[in-house]
Length: 355
Image (cartoon, rainbow, N blue to C red; front, side, top):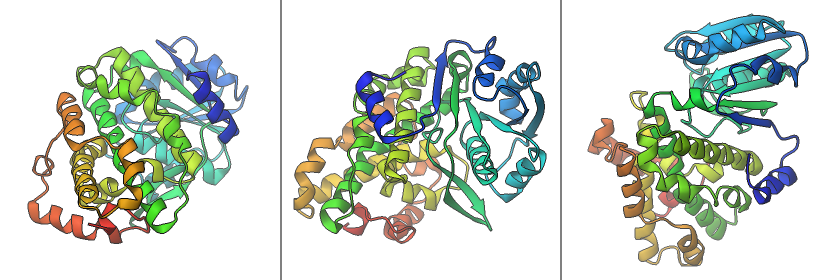
């Protein structure tokens, strides 16, 4: 799926690697593809009301030909929390394999449930909307507090591009929005490396470097649901997820821009739509700090990877993503509060610790 130099890095840094299958259509091969990994047993297919209609029903019907299969369809308003997790754990108690059909919430729930039970799982992505498909963590709300928890990688990621390209365009736009955090997150990590001595690893960025410019250049295509553009976007998102797994945390893809968004998000907008706003805001702050001489030790390293805020804003505009905090319903007072206090929300040094 990826160019040989990138595949070499993945093979050297991650073992075992999930099997990656991407094809124009998988509809006639679902049962055979899954059987390569688990020849027989009980398979629990997990989706929600939306993804069940989009692809989950098809996956379930296909697996019934080779497996004893159960279908767990969660509610439309499902959250990645203890209630949904308990439902999956109870209904999939006797399953040998979990099969997730969905994106953010479904992916997080199934990967965490599979990790806790010590069972393998396979993911059929339904949108190029986020970078967590192959990250070894899951964002789950336990005891009312949403945090990142250790989880297992899938044994396989199976992508039906026809299905993915038919997903609501807004989801792909959000995937691009989330990708705009790369330069700001990398700058924050470099700041921490130079100013606090935090260990830094360039490998997560080496693997995405050949793909990012093409994806950013296809922003308009992503906004109109272009098949080729969305395929490129998904590859970038998968590599971003692998980068987080290599680093052992979300550090390569999450810095101040994510901390601010997490403080302000109320679920009205998609995560990537929020990041499209905060990433540009943080790029502007980082540029100001560098120009003011506050980060001399890291200035050359950051300059080499920095994308000016005006350029990020243009990519965002071409993708027809929200452009201001107000467009997300965030008040000026609320945004100022988050800007001043987001640095206290987690133990992660960012540009907010300087500004």
